[in-house]
Length: 62
Image (cartoon, rainbow, N blue to C red; front, side, top):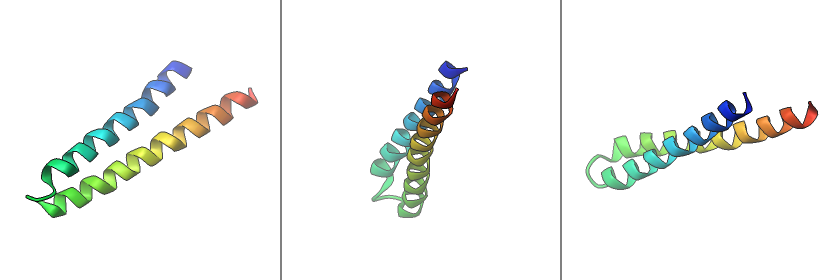
């Protein structure tokens, strides 16, 4: 279970990086889409940090 949770949190980080790359590639052509991608990247990075802290706190208590 711990390995699965680690994979999920790293998946959030990878998705966030993909969204950041998409922002850089589309910033000059489609600004609206880039802003949405930027928000999604911020959400993915937040979820990475949140899942990591939650997992660490959860398994420290057990």
